[in-house]
Length: 405
Image (tube, rainbow, N blue to C red):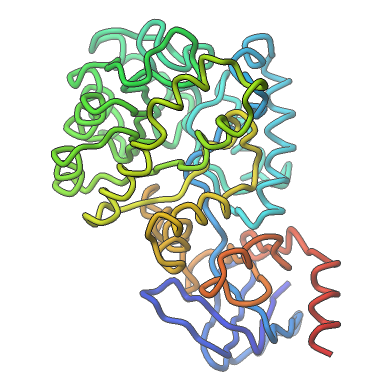
């Protein structure tokens, strides 16, 4: 099926270019034409009148955990689950991501490498779900953050072996824990875990096969170790300082701040374990300051939610973008962080992240103009993945048409 959207606002994602009233032609082969008018010449054509609507690239959540259940203590739940339990959850979550207009996710840690199997099932067409960039099981030091779902390794020889094992299993990138974390009982969030040398050994293994890396970081020294070691993206980064920001700029390191995740924990006192609340209270104000430091300095930023952590259900990316805007970003910059900026974080900017001829037809259609109000990104009217219609919000579409009449 070839689709033609007409009379529609197009956020191209190519610079800040907006076509106020344009057309776009696409199918499973990709985006065929974009402009104020397009030439069709296709027999199997479905037209959609986009009056009052906006089309943009499908959203990318750059930090999720497929198969982690967003319960008050997800690691406790995961500890007693088998591969099938986690896989079933991943399938359900994939549908939820698509419904929210999230056509790609970067999965940064799932037990049993279930996300790699899930990615393969989506790619083969066995199940419907978002495009997945899968890290599989994270690599952590013995007893390190997230060890319940991870490969534990110590020293360069062991971490190299772990990295090579994950790459052999088909990981698109490698996830490492450079500091302690909030969810792991007994871990001090700011404490350094892997050394810079160990992190560098992992990054070198990824680099050899042109793969990227992501590092969980909270404490300042752990952040700097990860940047100097050559990681592609720094996750969370609650405790940045000026030196860390300068290092990120020098190395071209991208930040994925996950501003929403700690707020959801604080919103549930009495539900999540007390040790999580205590940890978050110590660092949440620094998290905002660190994000603003990085943003104002020009550090590349990709949006991610940390979906799967307590009460962090699939599809809350708009909440993350809203926080970014509250903390200083423009709506355009926030959308960029969840489209082309996120595509760059996985080295896929030539295929994803903007509405340009030749790119994959991962597209969402929403009511109104999200540049004026980011809330318009909630409940998209249409979601296309690889040119296929995978979600149509019929009630929203009907309401739009009635308003139009």
